[in-house]
Image (cartoon, rainbow, N blue to C red; front, side, top):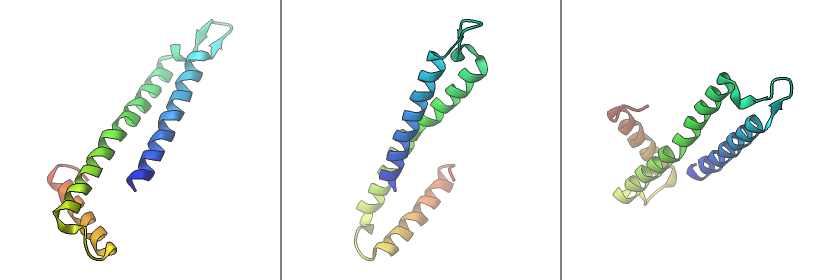
Length: 100
């Protein structure tokens, strides 16, 4: 799950970089302005950048929490039971930390 999230984070970063390159490299010939000169485009690219940049810390925090739960004694036994216990504790953690 976390590995797949890392892959999609990389895809999102690549897409954002491609969009920024396109916006800064495309110049309107009649006005001699790039697409990045338009406030609406800059604003959308900025919002996308914020979303992409927040993925890594969130993923790392989730991985850390899962590692803590695993070390707390949920590493043995049935895998399905372990995953259910981890999900339950993460939901509880989310409610107590102001998340979820």
